[in-house]
Image (cartoon, rainbow, N blue to C red; front, side, top):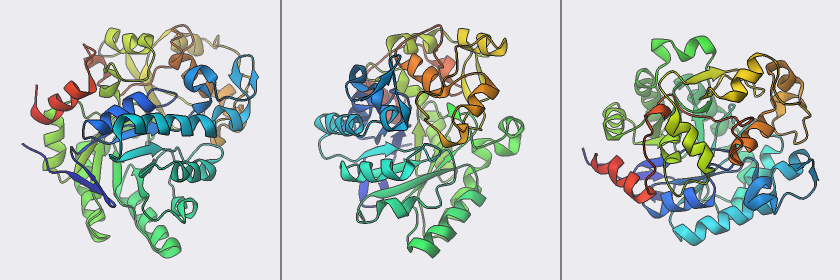
Amino acid sequence: MSYNSLKIGKYTIEKPIVQGGMGVGISWDKLAGNVSKEGGLGVISSVGTGYYNNKEFAGKLVGNRPLSEANFYSKTGFEAIIKNARKICGDKPLAANVLYAINGYGDVLRNACEFGVDIIITGAGLPTNMPEFTEGYPDVALVPIVSSAKALKIICKRWQKRYNRLPDAVILEGPKSGGHQGFTYEQCSMEEYQLENLVESVVAEAALWGDIPVIAAGGVWDKNDIDAMMALGARGVQMGTRFIGTHECDAHDNFKQVLLNAKQGDIKLMSSPVGYPAQGVVTNLTHLVAKREGPDIKCISNCVAPCNRGVEAKEVGFCIADRLSDAYEGNLETGLFFSGTNGYKLDEIISVKELMNKLTQGE
């Protein structure tokens, strides 16, 4: 099967492959810039930009960690990442992923618009007020992430009523994705909540609102998977974990090695301070947390609102900001390594160009 381009708002993505936004620091300028350059949609993660370029933009540090949400998310760091990605991809469409659960969500959305991002993607919650923060930037396309037709319907109703606009596309994420899931633990393993069983209902709902393109995500690994999603009515796919296996991915080599070494059964759901189940590789940290022997939880960065200044982190046994940033810095002892369920299939590191060719033309 050959693919049509993917239209999101006024932007045309030549190859209908969206690279998932992965933080902290897994999809920044090098990965996102190169995916866009090669005809996909590169997505910059806005999470933890205070860590960019060896914390050059972090402002105030406490014990080598950015203090508070104002420094964990660095506005100047985010701007530098977008500028450097632009140097790679030129005027091709470029996106940013902004988590709904973060502290300062509206400010980060505005910053993304100011810094010239074309498309903004939001998950980790139902972004019913997303258009409020992008007023004055009508060309910026808005793409919520949902886990059901019902969620899409709620968003469309609210956006149309309050802001007289609709999503430019929607990402439907099933429970095989890396990181946080929009499902309960039980739902993640239930047949009716698997991606392939959700696509058609979301495509049908999207059609009622004027043909909103649906992008399928969560467990999409190769061209066969892409073909299967397109056959169900998706116009594109989003893939995160597969892009970790590229030279250009901003992740530390140790992170890539964790995935290369992972076997089937090593990738599991775990509790998270964000309040959703999260998917990642079982590592030393996982064992420490299970025994309640994990690193101290100090809530230095105050990253996500649902954590309630470390209350939830203490409940589950780890601080998500500290552990994801440890993974970004390659710390195998205390890093948290998110991965989709198919991450164990990663067996080589190749270029983004080669990966895009494999995905569109087959192995």
